[in-house]
Image (cartoon, rainbow, N blue to C red; front, side, top):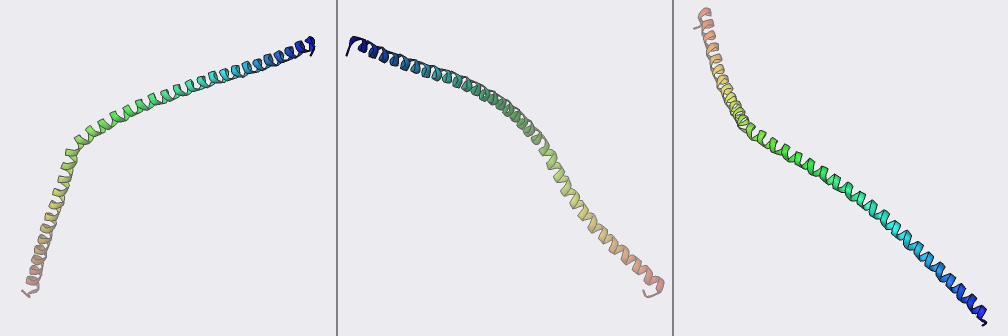
Length: 124
């Protein structure tokens, strides 16, 4: 090969190498840009997750406070509920006694009327 042909072949190979290097540099640049975009999206996503987590913590705190308040209210209501149940049982018992007394009174009253009718009619 002639020196000019060698120079041309070397220049062509160097040109191919330079083009290949530029292609690699471009690929690396695109990868770096994609990585930066992915990091930005990940940071945004993490921020949203942290924000939701903070909201959840606030909501759970409110629920805990509400449950504690409800527990106190229920413990205050329990004696009243027990009293009302006791009054109800006493009322049912009183109604039963009153019913029995009314029945006895009714029977006595019916017997008295029957005797009066027998006296008036003269069968007695």
